[in-house]
Length: 238
Image 1: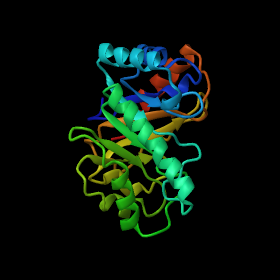
Image 2: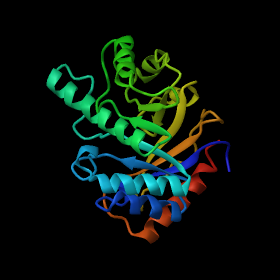
Image 3: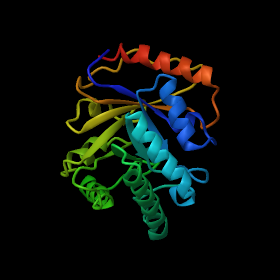
Image 4: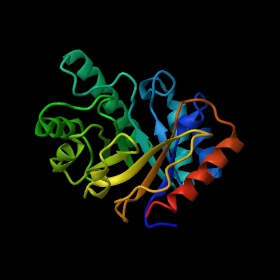
């Protein structure tokens, strides 16, 4: 096994099922941690029943595994020039942050926008840092940045609690060696092959985040095969 790159699997592999059960199944399928989805309408935290959150908190505590909470990706753009869109996007991130607190997650994963930010990187970094002003002293967040100026934005994230996630095929390769890199995100299907090597990856990168190409209910046997493929691929990365 390589240094770091602990395999965290998204609950999107079992889209529609109850989160506590999904978390347990993913760990039993060989995942070394989980990324809890907050995608609407099924998993938006404000729509989750309190009993579900309580059960999820219990499962996370009993499994004693690495858990990240990922803020919604659909219809999100915290950089939007339309203040109504930006406000709604920020609210969705804050909901995910509250869920992360509630279940004592290890960190929060945030995709600020589905489109690259074209403006001043310093302005973008300030907006991202403002997003997480409510982070506790021992809480952490990692941004999934896309676009050619991702490095310039990451360079300006001064808060030590903030990191970045490289998105395979969507983030400049130079980010693989960035001092704030905490994970590599890979989208995988049951058929599409994975590239064998990502050159330049930092050896101490802690996490490999595995997402499905599309959110749906994968069969358990298929999840196990995908996890095994991802682990074999991981061993070729460094």
